[in-house]
Length: 321
Length: 120
Image (tube, rainbow over all chains, first blue to last red; front, side, top):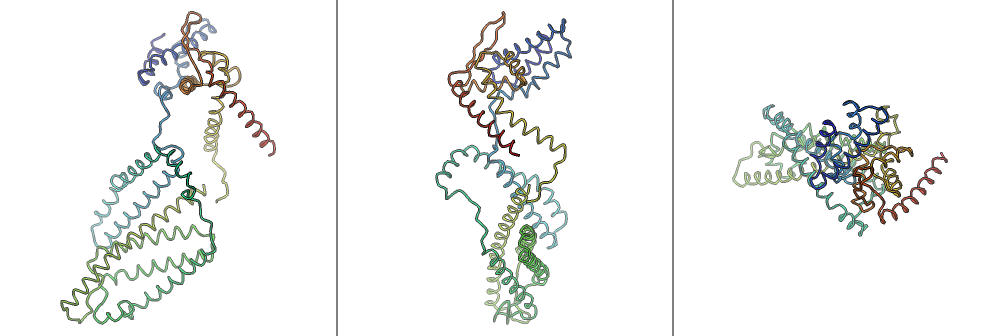
């Protein structure tokens, strides 16, 4: 064997499992020797180093060749990979949307621009990596147990998710959403002129906090936008994608508003000219505490809707491809 | 669904190459098993396959031989021939049974695909 061939075989052997190394290298050496001998016989001379190199190139890079002798390993196999990839896109997209919403909320409530920008800039290295790591770990564990899980699922067909056929009820649901949304909008638009619509009889001593004036127009615009999207889908049922994307945008904006509200001390206050008795102050405090709980639920529900919309957008684009 | 767009040339070539390798992978296992109905060592096996129109890289063939042996389809032994030690492979008993089944499967599949492609 020439030094070049020896070096090649040594490099292959270095990456092979020790218990099979000698055997495999011996077999490869025999093949190389036979090829070199055949060519030398045909040419009637010894091979040059370049010609030997050409023979070795057929075998491939030493590491690549050694790797082929190992078991075929993967963290997430082909069966789970499409679901893993889709979940990753949704989770990272959803996490990004929520963090963009938080950054916007900070900006709107007067936090320094640097804080919001820093938060977003650190996203890939903090939250992004964490989301990626956990999802990958969970799917890797799922992949390990996939055959057993599939067997269980197959034994009970009810647990195998089958797509639900589109029902006629869908159009009625859409109409109901439009009617409900329009009634809300009319109610909302009437509040500045008649606060009693917001507080009922309590309007005599309660008034909206200053945050109400700040958010009134954005809430109206977002609500109008979602109504426009609903109308568009009602008139053009083939625009289902428009609805999903529209909903994703309006939900993200509404999450921004909810986060701003969460950072606000009070959403209601005593009406001007009303004496701040202990009892009334307690009532206002109680209502504001309850409002915070409602806002928290609103944030959770909206985040869930954003993830659902992201899921639909991703699955629709996968189907389109 | 959007209507199928024309694929750029480079993508089409890469796609073809992937599909070709996928198509070839299963066929290669059957070809190796079929060729090893008579005993060979690596070098002569590769030559025999190439002479029948199926050239295989060494980097593909040798690991494949080891895998098939681990699966119990091949048996091997080191033996001297022409004053050189060589590792000879042949089908095991299990390998012979599997090859018969795969052969029937291959012929059926081949005939079906030929009929499907002829219909077009």
